[in-house]
Length: 174
Image (cartoon, rainbow, N blue to C red; front, side):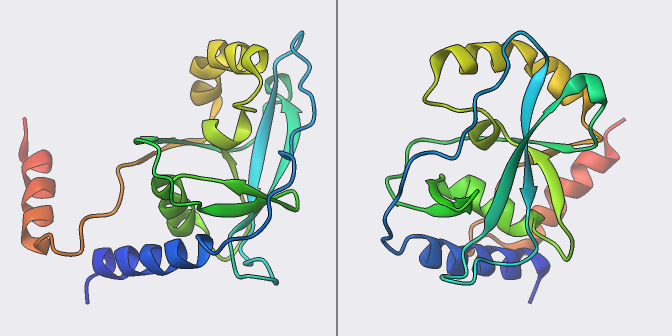
């Protein structure tokens, strides 16, 4: 089977596991210093959470002035999906949308990975923080070692030759 099909199937299995109901406590955010260039970075753990095999991460605060090494993830949020998908962040179950869960599933490797992901690195419930961080997004993406563009997984029914054709057409453009 193709790598795309395995990724889509793995993402579907992760989606099923992440949707199991569990209690959620407060969001795992410490206050950012809005007078500086502070951001939150996320460490994506290679190990799944021991209680329920969900993805687990840790957030930490750093400053862009310290030139941290991280990758930035760009992806589509998509419409709210009401699937009750959650991952562990700093020991707290945090809701995520399916597209982000699939991206994290694919990005999780054998070693920790440091990422900036707007949906998780910014406290979305704090309007002032959100506004401050949005103003910094251009610089956040510019300073990232890699900017990763997640376009999602193909549908399981999508023919693999069509994906190859699209890729081939993109490569053959002048």
